Length: 245
Figure 1 (spheres, rainbow, N blue to C red):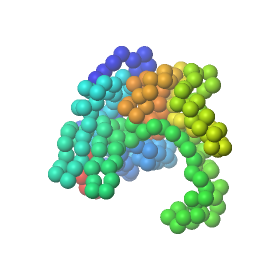
Figure 2 (figure 1 turned 60 degrees about the vertical axis):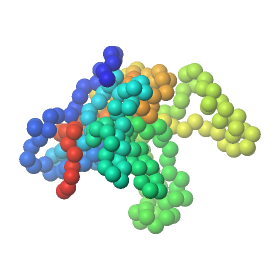
Figure 3 (figure 1 turned 180 degrees about the vertical axis):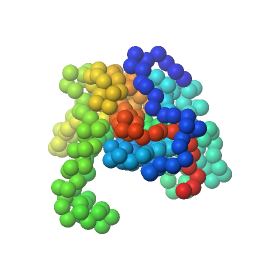
Figure 4 (figure 1 turned 120 degrees about the vertical axis):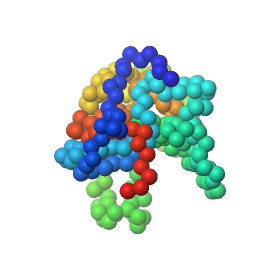
């Protein structure tokens, strides 16, 4: 569904029939992992192709009513798929776990809660982390800084309206004798055009972060890593499902 939007965002995906027969790098997906890879490799001078199975939607086109959301759902179950294969919300139903993932240009960043917490460095002691990080815990700080530069996390401003839930959590922490702080979130709180050339208005407190930000204030990969990749020559294609490599 398309709504009027004062900060109309330029589309960056191309029709699939415009794809070349050869690229030096093929990136499958467009969420955090894929978006970062596309951006960094394009900046490094590689000829990058990004393939995303979902659609390209810009702010103003995400569902904002239950009636619209029903058509934006798909389920992966034992018996097969229910719903359109490019529907925005994809639920994986398994015997021991359910998972909700995003399907669209921006991946799950389109529907997550955009909280931007850093890792507790004590977890780096576990063996699955690369030795470079386990042996030098501060090595990871450089990469967090790079992520902050791209995602622009902010805490909820004091100048914005007070939030009852936030105040209740602060009182709860005080009663328990625990430290209270606002978590950084990847949300923009001022009208601006960001460093990647994408116009972004300020957050309106609509509360639709996890159903698709129709304001354009949420810093999904569609606002940063993906346009940065495109600015450095990457070619992006949507509704392109990869079955095998």
